[in-house]
Image 1: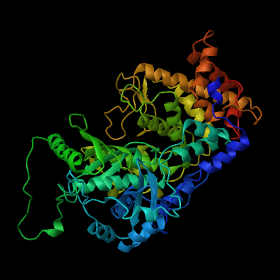
Image 2: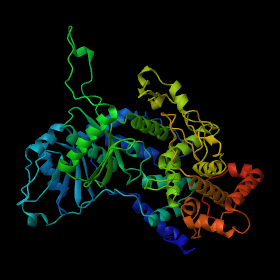
Image 3: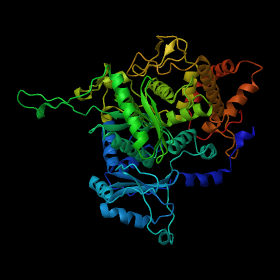
Length: 583
């Protein structure tokens, strides 16, 4: 029981600490109209998921954001700096090569600066005055990159009257800090929005991810000019949290792309190329060479592993300067399309991301998910479950994938490796939902819905948004939205699924009990989402009643009785703060 009170302070002191945590230290000098300014405006609008609020600002397509971010990264440099540096003199020195659009500092085994110039020519100018270091008895491998090391000619002159460098935060809050923030929130809705703000990728972290891809692209371009290294997955789909891995793929589709306008007469030119037995062999050979190049010549790339016999061959490495664990694949276009679909779902309604982040955090707190491959439910599967649940609401909060396909035009048509990946790409053509349910109600109903879901016979399908008979015997079946013959949760074992069901039922019961009995705000007990994130809460509930009935059966009966006797009360939740005395 002592663990439940860890880090819980008085309401006044928590509120003071909360105001400090929610003001991240940053150094951004972004001009109006830039990607940084656009994203900051989006963060302000999505910072709280108010029910029924509608953002009238035109929303950018996923491809537009990707292209703008990539172009921004190409104008950006990464500089390792001395621990003590005069920021004004540093910026004045760099400004000799052209105007600076924005910059920020962060710490990762040293002090680093990310500096975005207004023109690409400024980067070239800086490279032209940079020298290859002299390493004494060791030899340096010359490589002209955009990753620099800054040294001071006379460090003694720089140590006087230095203002402290403010570094942007690149990590999520500790469990203690998170509980403090959640316990001083005004409502369960406020708790979910607070968790989203604290865990979502910041503007600086997003820029650092695109810059890392751009630096890897510079290495790959030595072999494959006109290639592109694009981030996908959690780094770009709007559901990534601080500290998540950086997935990227080497896009070679633009190399030698046939353009009819450039040909004339009866002649057709083709490149001389090497032939290999299959596309998989080609992928393995390409990644083998790129992996070797990163290992031998890539600045900051360490721990390179070439995992070429996996279903999807990849190169895994750590990028030391950014602190990211990176996975590089090639021509993984379906994964990028999945990222675009999730990006759209996250942008359609402000409640989606808040609910997904909270469910994922709840699952991790109870060891339902893990960073180690195994029989656990993945974050992607949980996201699919949340989307499916929101499609099942009345009225639906999210449209089905099939409906998005009906809105597509000729420009949106997309066939990848024989799979139909077509859906409307313009967010402004999708009508907002009329559903006004609170996040508190949605969280409670999510746990109740899947606590009673017939996993033994039904599958989850966001393409049609309805329960269907399982095509196979896997305990949990979630259809891949594009490669429809695949089950994205095939790895999940029966015991892990049962653990999820039991915990979902217990969490629903806890939220129902809090809705019925609200103690005074002066209580120091964790409540709402904070109570659900403490494993001891769920364990204590089940253990205290173990002698009567199995936990899952007992709670299922409780939920049924609560729902039948107080349906009107449960749907009229006013969203105010609740603290449970039943836990």
